[in-house]
Image 1 (tube, rainbow, N blue to C red):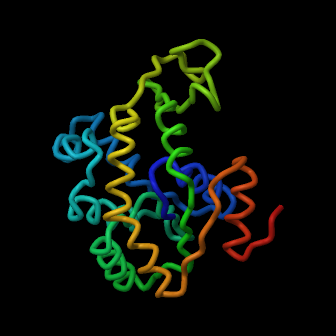
Image 2 (image 1 turned 90 degrees about the vertical axis):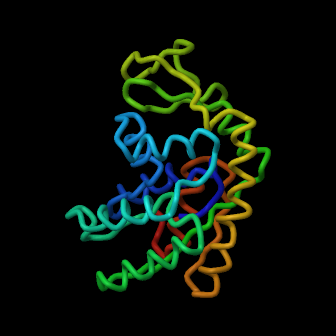
Length: 213
């Protein structure tokens, strides 16, 4: 799944995971866990994540290659946040070819810049369980407190408005060219990412050639 930060790729990927019993591979989740655990990889990656830059390709590619070997990916997989650059896409092609697998669809979620900034700048994350809430679209029952576990809600550095603007700039220069890359391969479908989550889900399912239920 392609699209700028805040386009809703992760939400839709989870819905697809439930529908098709496929594994969801989120490089963002993997990296955030490494940063939180202060692993060597996490310390290396945090310097890039904190300023909204991309983590080096070699780190991401190795993480994804290992994840694809897990048993829960045998029935299928959904890539959320990877690849982000043309070199990553080419590395992914090589990995999948060696595994005798391939991509059958690439979805590009389209959302206007002003909507993305509103979505991300209002997002809050629980320090304890990682659950997300939003000051406007999904406010917690008690301000600053997670509805799920009662943990403290905070704004991640990469959700601050100035960092979001930079992340969008990075996306346009380094990740957007993937749209043309996969369009030339004939497997790209563009999705309108504005609206209710269920409506966007129906568009995604339709783009995959599946019936909506």
